Amino acid sequence: MDLETRLAAATDPKQRISLLNQLAEALRGKDMKQAIQLAQEASQLSLQGAFVDRTYLRGLAVSQYQLGQFLREVNRYDQAIQHLLEAQRLFEQVGTPLEKSKVLNLLGMNYLSLSAYAESLEYFLSALKIFHDLGEKNQEAEVLNNIGQLYIFLADYQKASSYLF
Picture 1: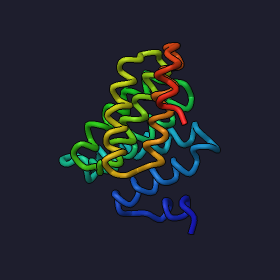
Picture 2 (picture 1 turned 180 degrees about the horizontal axis):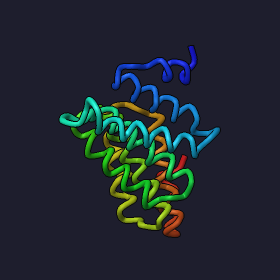
Picture 3 (picture 1 turned 180 degrees about the vertical axis):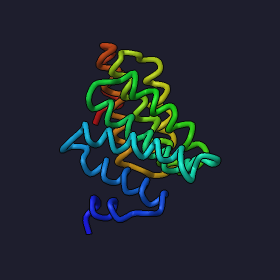
Picture 4 (picture 1 turned 90 degrees about the vertical axis):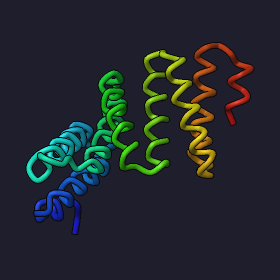
């Protein structure tokens, strides 16, 4: 059964939020406007109905992270940062170290796009430490390349070369 069919049949609020987030991710490269709308819907549902008195933090964290990803991809960096800062706060409560470090890396990428190099480096270094500690070599390599790019933008090619592969 495809995600849209499962979503249409979902009655459990947590399942519906999870499916909205999954469908948003599936549409990411195909229909960004729809992906953003679905992530926004998941975010809103995490705060209302059955969750009025107790927010569904996991669903909200994932949808905020996705909104940060999607908005970055359409060059809306300031908005992306706001959603990612909220995702960071939420993942501190309900996330895994891997999820937290992915948010940190994405924050670094957004700040890099805004030429906020000091903030970008701070987030990259935090993500790098976590990825290294977790043994996440691919993620660690991605962050090292991001740091290398940062130093290229700063025209510090010697430092850049020590981070780039």
